Image (cartoon, rainbow, N blue to C red; front, side, top):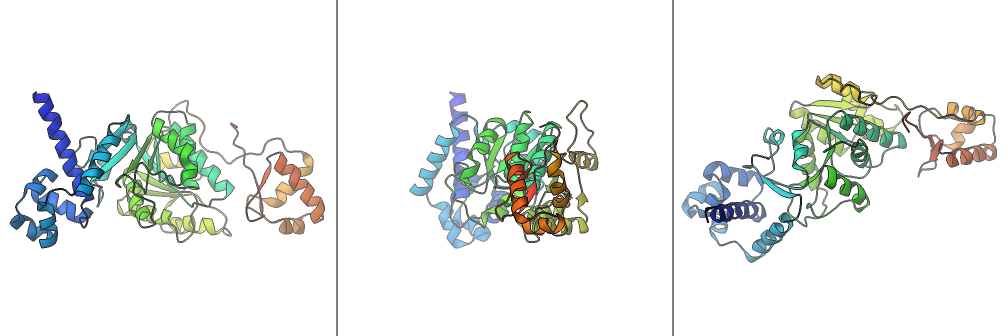
Length: 382
């Protein structure tokens, strides 16, 4: 009987936490003011109007004294049904399992919805972020850094967006270790966005953790992604920016992390690439320039695990037929148009087109959506 009473008490406490996050007009700042003033959410809803009004004003005070609305009760019931499924969790600010790293941020979420393994929060974490439209090289770098750092015992934190985020998560999953990655969602935990990352999200759910601060069914809206980014920054001991334009959400994440006293890392790129300019700006502002995953671990003061895979190295080409080598030498390491290539080679566009087509078929180069060509970088292990 005592156990049943305890369970009922925990359930009512959780319902109060959920109601506090679902009440219209009560944002994070107001909710935290109420918690600081009155303690747990259950106490808030039992507090007299006269005590509530000086803290939140007349309208919200009346709202808090009213019985919970039918709409909110329905949402709470749906949330509790979701919670009853395997590996589904809700962590409140008062929960002992709540990530300690977030408690040190200026605006920790009132609660977190977690789909996956809570052990992921126990590992040291590094955020890997960047553009949604990376170059081939950028995506490969994100994947390689994610895999290497995860193999060294780090949890890769990112935002499940397409591009660099997805590549970093994918690389971490390739490391074949426990709890390799955490995805912070900008939607409700049951609303996968973007849909194209479904396979990656399933892998994260089974081996890492999907997390969100937003109620179930919350859709994707632009204003929620900076909110998500503060959690990415807060969970991590440092942030690696792989590719980013000068005006990029990734730079917002880096700034948030910097304001928290965390290390910022950036991978340099071509001075001609718009997607390198954000990284170069960060480096000018004091971010650490990195070329390998080991650079990050050394900067953070962590030793490389014995017998671990070699750190990320500049990719090397496989055995290349002799006739393709002049094309690769002229191409360099950046995307280039066929017209630009003809300026370096004594070939007609027709001859060069045939060579490039052969190189595509052999996965030596790839043709990008803008029509330019870029060499494919093959890691030595592949």
